[in-house]
Image 1: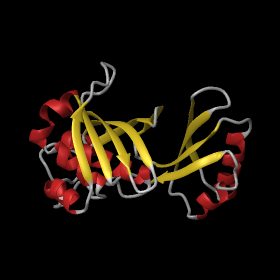
Image 2: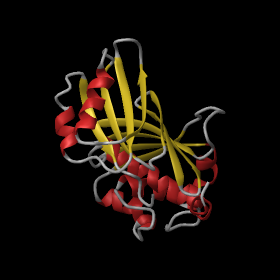
Image 3: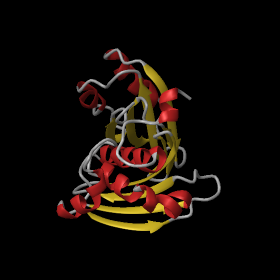
Image 4: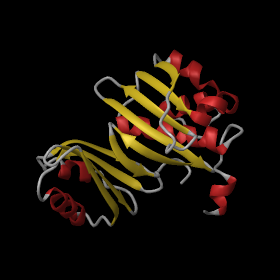
Length: 222
């Protein structure tokens, strides 16, 4: 752990875990959804539920969903700004089990043409971990650019994808695939050094097994 993780990032609010980390979770969810959320169900777990209100966690999560970064002065007014922008936000609670980090949240989002269910945790110093997406286990810290691909589990899929990335000289830092069963729906996350060039999505759309592509940039402050 670096000294910056101990101190925490530049932010508005009293707690790097409950405020900055929460904002980053919301920001990541908005980017993965790929469009502004119109409806958001925010389900708080354990410490986020018990002490989050006093640390501005609800405001921080919604600020991230609005696209605000942790140091935005608008963070404290995020709930009102969401209402003014027509975002319907409902808060509730969830028990994610003893294995989940105490500072965890499940976000169920709907935009104009997409939906997303995401579970994530704020693990300290403003650092976060995305733990689940649409029922698939993942492990995304947001410190590297990530390519998220929904696809059918087919032979040679990763070989075709990595060949495309090699063509544009992308250095892969890590790959993880989760699938429901052999030959069924799957989710692959590829983290890279640097940033994805714009033409990557165009090139990857030629891979027939892919149903959805999303790029998650490095989270604010990393």
